[in-house]
Length: 473
Image 1 (tube, rainbow, N blue to C red):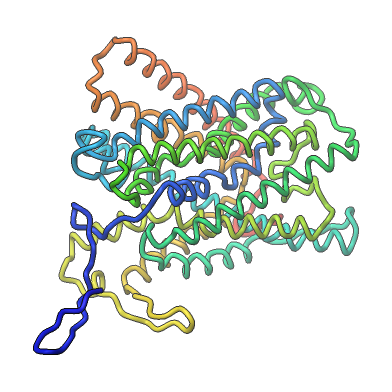
Image 2: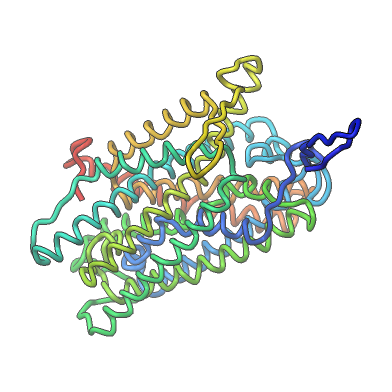
């Protein structure tokens, strides 16, 4: 703020700093970008990795984790270079993933990208609602087991917890944009480390206690643990779960749009991606391998809520509380691009509408003045309600996560970043670089389709005995 003397008096003038594109000056850095990535990546996917390892075994499990981590990091670097058009260092900002695809590829690919990205974002918000409700129900069940004994029938409906999570998200969704989420993302990242470390610690304790469990180089045994068809379907679903565990490309450009222009955004984003993916892989490898060693081929689908652990019950409660807090932040990180798309489109279509464009100051005790937008309040509340209802309708943890990962990993993490890089770098067809990038893309497409089919098969099997809105954990 500056003061300008006029006729002996001073008047305060707010000097609003902006970037070269006229938008508010960005102040993001390596730490904030890394926090956003870790918040987005270390999510509910980590909880299913022990189960995924049990399906794949000691060889294919860790190798799959390493392969998906490398692919995610490599394509994140390609995508970081596509934030500006036409070049990675100079040119106009694209602001969103769809904007980057429109600038570099355009046409039908832009439309397909939009469909893929927003199906992924909507699916992820539904998946996070399911996971948060299961964790909240697990806290209730954990206290019941401690009080009544481990053999007690301690069941809890997840519907009420989905409603509670939805109410919290209605309030949190009024934060206007990514720039306001730094504090929430940092807290969520801390929570993700906390429950991952608790899961690792409990697994080590179970291993040290001499659990009599069976593991194997190829995982579950056909004819003993599963049938041959179940083995095949479960392996592909496990791959889908691992893919979901690494999915964050759909919001990478939006995260990059929060960074300062100096040093260059693409360089900072590549470092943030390396920090995020490397940190995530270490935790995933520990959670997956130690969880498998602790539970063996009978590892639960969610190793903190499937009750492979009962005691200490207060630590189980705290871990699940950390999951819920983390998912409050992760839900917002994934929903912001959806909110932005709808709100920007409506402002462009009805620029004179006060309902859409006007903000109203509301004084909140101990927090100061908060700007409330009527359309934002209405639209975001409606979205949260819709995603909560969908979660109540299809509350299948492993199948839902695997399906989201399978259908979104290939187009968003692989196909579009590779195509934009080829266009930007003007790589000619049938050259060495074009050939191996195409082989990588096609190979991952085949794996993604197989994983998606397995998850659909799992959903169909679960739907046979399921009644909507009557989910019990």
